[in-house]
Length: 277
Image (cartoon, rainbow, N blue to C red; front, top):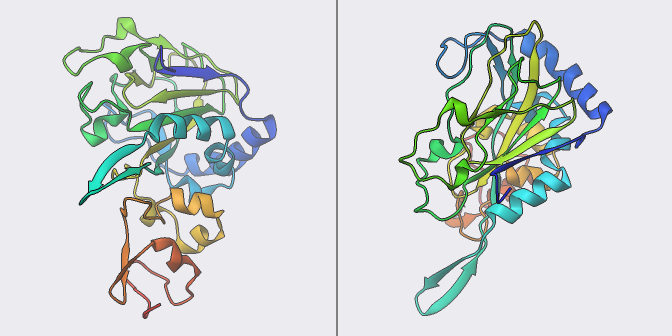
């Protein structure tokens, strides 16, 4: 990861995990429209988000020890700050920033090479740290001919002036259950599908929790569903304020961790604050 900005991990997920994800998401993908523009979303590509509301299988990805551990290692670099005369070290939290099932159909052209941290207007190398660690899990074969994700190895070390070139990119080739993991500063993009087969995968990203989520998880995942998820996942979906108190909620004059509201039967909607704790 440090050298290339991304790595393929073979057979990271068992066949039964892949089968369950396909069972849940194939009808979802079949029910959404192709993208309405060719430039980025792809006019021959189907995309479905809100995966924590749509399949339990996403928990296998989010809680995978290797992916989660790698994300924490890269993102959770401590920061020293002053509170008056007291020097304090804060380790940033991470959050789930985006989830999406992506299916590239025959005839789809290549996506423009881009960095995922562009969403945060991240600057390189000035900020000196990564904002995101992304994963793409293959649910079908990924080949150079069917749109396997294009990656420019080493591009995470570039500054913001260097333009990415398709000639520098290599196509990922993976079997179902294998995964590509890369950092937000690595140039990549969906490949061209010149085959007669669909290329299907799931992507999600862990971000610094002090940044805005790319996909709004509060509106994507119903509260009833959030309450049924493990606490670790609830917090990573944004129901946490962390040590730097990002995302607190005022109740009775106090800035509280929003996770406390999940246990309240009288809190059932955004903007519907319960009585004092």
